[in-house]
Image (cartoon, rainbow over the protein chains, first blue to last red):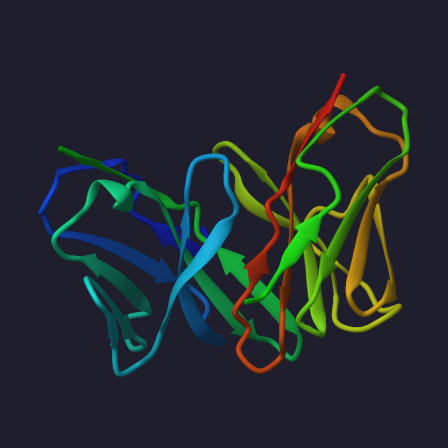
Length: 111
Length: 112
């Protein structure tokens, strides 16, 4: 079982749709959580950190459920420019530094 | 804004050549990382460094070495390039305080 698993995708949605991505992690020592966005042939860029209380940034909402070891990202009112790969990222507290990247979920938003 | 730069965007090398990939960050971050990214395999950690002259192996260190002589600079070295090292190489840095990783633009290396 992978340490961080994401929906395989791709997701094809029309403009204006709401889309949700899910991510599960297996290590209970996981300490901090992030969503990154990666455009084709570009580097990953931090989209948002994920907190236990949930957090929102404009059209984007991230949620964390530690009991279920589950992270989600909700995008409302999708734009064409949201088309990208979304990476779920988990940092482990193992006495050292360990970051696990999910394989990513590809999103296509169509006009 | 955090700036992470990499020495080349595209590089073509021959099998057996020694290859140097340079990464520089301007935000005084303690931690720096080298990843490779391949289709279907995602991001895989090669090496990381949490301080000058310190280095730790990641998940796939074989065939690579690193150097960190200054805090802002982290170099990845392919001692003898092979075709299976053809990949996108990404450098990243992060402070201890947030663990948010900031990536450079990547170097697409082709070994022929």
